Amino acid sequence: MSEEHTNLKKEWTDEERLALAERLEEELDVFIDGLEKKRYEEGWPEDRWQEEMDKHPFFMKNTPQPGDEVHPMFEGLQKLKYDPEENTAEELALNYKEDGNFYMKHKKFRTAIISFTEGLKVKCENPEVNAVLYNNRSAAHYFLFNFRSALIDAQIALRLKPDYAKARWRAAQCAHKTKKYELCTKFCNEILECDENNKEARDLLKENKKKELLLSHYERRELQRKKSLGAKHIRLVKALEERGVKFVKEGKRAPITEKILQSASGMAGHTVHLDEYDNKTLVWSLAFLYPKFSIGDYQVDIHEDALMETCVSQLFEEPLPWDRRGFYREDNVNVYYEDATTHQVHLVDLKKTVGEISVEKTFYVTQNGLEFYVLKKDSREEREFLSEKRKPFESKWFRVD
Picture: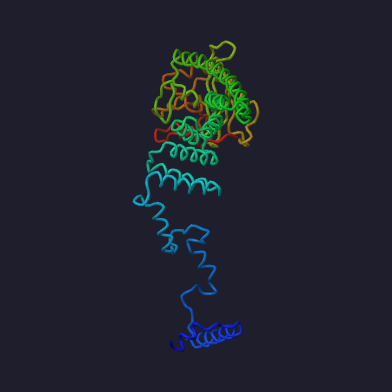
């Protein structure tokens, strides 16, 4: 038997075992100290370790922005999450839903809408998943005050999942916000059928009924007002047509329509109308323009049976503040009107009534109502005004004193 075999069979004492262990430790220290010293250069630099950590997909806090250097592992994770070849349509829809929920949590509602929309684009065949996407997108629209879009999405979610309580509540809220009070009542009642103690639905239903009653009241009043205005308008148009009054707009003859009537005498703030007492007499606005001073004066609520000489006399009851030298006086002026279609001027017979002048063959009502020009007799301004070479006047450049 060899000495080695004899040693294996030897019984070791505790002192011998301890001595052997100490010797082995000394030999290991000597071996480690003898290894070649090398610098570890493959790790993160000590002065940029936080920056490098933030770039790592496991530790990054912000999503990379366009143009940023992307970690290869992040690209791989993105592919695993969004690649149609790596995911089913339902998995993709759920991934986009998670993204949208994340943005909702951080109040990035527009970005959330994009995520939920992308989830719907994959056309997942699971109606419950699509219902959640529509309802979540409805919530995002709601917080952006896009109540009509929110209502549409909530209603689609309900069609996909008729028992979807969250979608029904969102639809009720949006119906109320968009003043669809009858629809809101329907949704609230459906909620209360399933949960009669739902305080939010009860409160909304109560508020909704108040608004609905108020709207009905206003609608009835508005309908009555329109009906009354409609009757007045019909009578007014009939009176204008019977008299043969002609309107122009932008230099062209125009039919007697509501639009023309509303624009007539707009500068003076009054449209032609019937006397409120007899509902027969036309009431006009008169514009008197002074070419010498490029200024205008207005008379409103003039009955058609008023004499023109009375209207002109009223212009000079007090001295004109801008005519300091007394250029214009009641006894030294002529009054003209211009044919808006031919631009020919015509002398006004002051002995005629306003109504008689308004229906003359060459007279057209303009946006200022009945428009006249006041000029000093035998003055240079009158001669230029009557000249065939003169340019047509545009009343819009006349200012009101």
